[in-house]
Length: 65
Image (cartoon, rainbow, N blue to C red):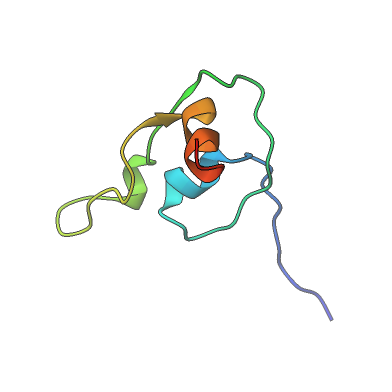
């Protein structure tokens, strides 16, 4: 039996890029990098779920700061 799978380790930006379609692990190389939704994951009738945000800003939100 064979199965198809893939692993993507993008860190926290993954949540923003795909509108919660996939979960992420906490890791990012540049905490000031601006995270935005991937263009293929939003469009007319399906707006980006989150505004652009840096990793540091997203962690402040998650931690209630």
